[in-house]
Image (tube, rainbow, N blue to C red; front, side, top):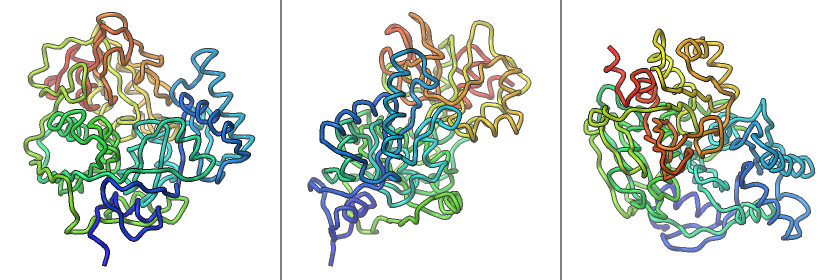
Length: 422
């Protein structure tokens, strides 16, 4: 009889061809998908060639997405994308999307059904953990591992222990999935789950949309997590129905699985909050942050650039205008979200309010472009990191927030709740 296992352990065991695994065990696993972007792929491609590989292990299991500096912002970024493009075409990579079809990778792949439950996925981008919301074990790696993965379809893993977060009850008015994960990170710290899988469960999680769940899994890395997993339920199955391009396998943690820690959270304790500079764990209630004046608001990214996020922001901005002296940049995560914004009239709401409505791109999230901060400027952003210099000058500041808070703040000119605008 095999030992009781968590979701993470079951997925790794299955892909290693083993009946069971234990935390700390080293295993070599078959991969379902290898991902890289316009920053990390050129290095991975160089490693691929240094291995003497002639072709990728499976043309349907490699995904290359130019999204960080897309559309190309300068000559160097154009060369980076050119390297990806030529490699993708030479190896007949199925999942390569150019501008016009490409979006932010961690929103695009689930939307296109490229990743699904039970998958083992590595990506040369730390927010690859997003796909854990689909019931996958998905984790970020370095470009070297991605290059080896593209050539061999295999990777080594140290089986992580799992921390289970049980979130129960109804969220207070105005609180959202973004507030749940900021609350968790504020509680355990940016290294509180270092090289551990984070498993999210409970009635509050089950009550979230898939967009909300992906927001939470996306930021598992900000607590040091190796992966951020959620079990597949009826909400997930309905969302996945007709979307996944491959049959998928559901893995559920055994009731008596062994966890490194089980943390119980009352949803009533989760308030709308913002992460002050310069760590995602530096969380403060919005009600204690109203004195923070801002120069810019960013609504988008792989964390909060999905249609649900766009609708929330538009509902607050409708009939209102951005405060004098504030810039508001709205970035839908994929072309499908962008089109939906136009079809639903959300794009008009953003433009009427005085926002910039952008094509899909990572843009300012990583300090790329389309919203770089000058010295001393402050931005409230729905992105995932607020490290020193993350979005521009080292003296600038980024405050992480939900789409509702970011939109309200853009109108108020300072960090604010939507109710403050009434």
